[in-house]
Image (cartoon, rainbow, N blue to C red):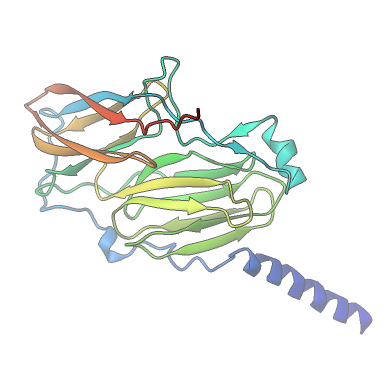
Length: 267
C-alpha cells in the first residue's frame, strides 16, 4: 500500500513539472485544410524560372549584443561552453554584412499553386540556445522541436495568426512536433525557463524565402518570371520592401540596406 502511494505521488510530481513548464497537448500536430497548396492553380515552369539573390547591408555601427548570464542554471553553464552573446545583431567581419534577416516574396505569386512542403523543419534547444535563431518553413509543414540538453526547456510560440502553444521538454533527447496552419511573418519563440532564449520563424504558403548568412547573402532560386514585392525582416531594425521584375531564366541581384540605430554616447 505504501509502495502504491509512492508511485501515485511520483506520477503527480512528474505531470506537474511538465504542465508548469508549458507541456501542452499536440493539438496542432495535424495539418488543417488551409495547409493545402496556395494560389490559383498554375504551376511554376522550371524551364523559364529565374531567381533573386542579394545581400543585406547595415548602414552605421551595429549596437553591441547583450551578454547572456546563465548562472541560474548550472547545466546551461556547462552545455554552453564559454561566454554567450545574444544574436540580435550578427554582422560580418567588415561590420556591414547583416545576418539573420528573413527575406521572402511578399506579393506576386497569387496565380500559382505549389506542391506540399517536403521534409521536416527543425528547431533544436542546444547549449541553452535555440538553433536556428531565424528560419523559415511552410504552412502545413511539420516542425520538429528537439531538446538536446540535459535540462528542462520549454518552447513557447507567440503567434498572432496561428494557435499559440507552450510545450515543456524536461528530458534530454525529447522531441515534439507542431504544424502552423496559416502564413505568418514572423512567429516569435521564447523559453519561459531560460529568459535569454529566443528565436523567430517565418511561415509561408510558398517556397520563396531565405535567411541571410554571415556574409549578409541570400538566394531565392527557381522563381517564375514576373514582378514581385520582396520583404526583408530583422528582429530589431524592422522590415523593408522593394519591387523586382525578372524575365525568363533571369537572375536579379538586389541589396537591402538597414540603417543602424544611433549609438548613445556619454560625455
